Amino acid sequence: YRAEISFLLDTERMRNTTTYLNDFKNFLELMKQLAFSIKMNKLSSETYIFREKHINCLEKSGFMKEGILKQHILIDRNWFDAVIHGYFLQNN
Image 1 (cartoon, helix red, strand yellow):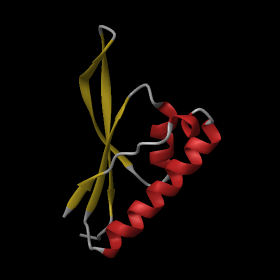
Image 2 (cartoon, one colour; image 1 turned 30 degrees about the horizontal axis):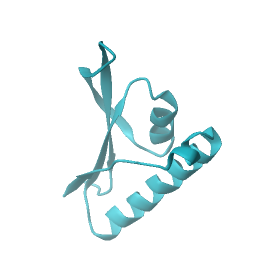
Image 3 (cartoon, helix red, strand yellow; image 1 turned 120 degrees about the vertical axis):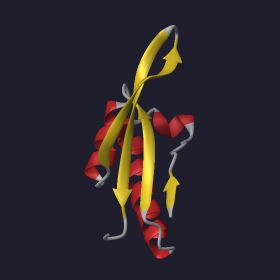
């Protein structure tokens, strides 16, 4: 079993980078604990390439980069890549 995770946070909390990253790190740990307790195999995440701090936090939390979706999102007439990360909970 697998699940994709998304992280949404109140705009005020996002303005403070330390608060944002702490909240995100805690969210990832809670999601890993929950997923393990219900015997999930994998968590995945898709992040736009310009969210470097978000990507770094994922990787510090044990998520592995699995690939890049080229020109995946159009913002203000510019195409951006998305990075796919995965975290495996079961030993296969």
